[in-house]
Image 1 (tube, rainbow, N blue to C red):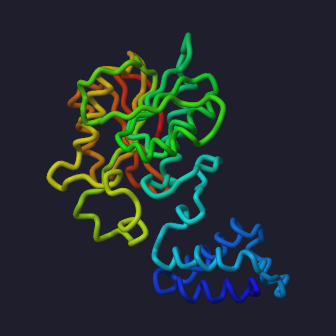
Image 2: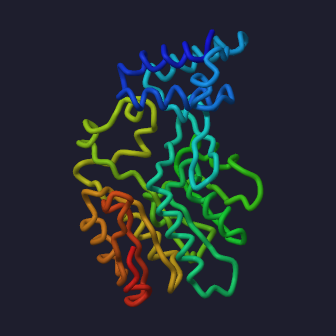
Length: 294
């Protein structure tokens, strides 16, 4: 089969689910990853063939995309903070906006006057993308990742070699459990924060495939994970340490209020690429970097 024919047919089939530019991007991404071609190969070399032994595999992958399965699951990898993370069913796909949380966390650690090894806690670690990205950037950091999902932890524990974080299974909502680590210089979390009523705004590729427990919270109690994180921080964030959490843009002020009520004096809302409230930074110091723009 000609590569150009596969791409043209694939785009036409995916246009039933996605806008044409997005459908095109998905098919080209599939071909680049699986066949090693460029996104223009079919244009400048129109006679390029898909190897006969790969046609069935490519058709199977395309069928998965046509069932709205995320391209990241089909490929088995996704890019995050310049690294390729393994992902698949049972683990939340890292989002680009979460890279802001990592960048802010790394910056916070580098601004601290630490005498020993930086200590980092990542709650609701999922694929481990935050924990690993911090560990790969701050090479001497000891990073602990916590999640309830054993499926997600299976991915987190096997992402890379080197300065591997420690990943452990625990329920973040159990705030009084015994915990063998800490205190921490940095506590980070991207917890579930999408309200149930927001399901109608989401696509099939998310709703039908990604783990609901990593995404959704009850409409009647959308801040339950933030109250839990605030309690973890009360117990384990060292004086002068920093906490960072990703948030629901619609609940910025309410979420900030959770950390203020927990006694944290310096609570700031940070914004994403589009100016939307995306994360909160908190500490126990009233003047720690209080004039720095997030």
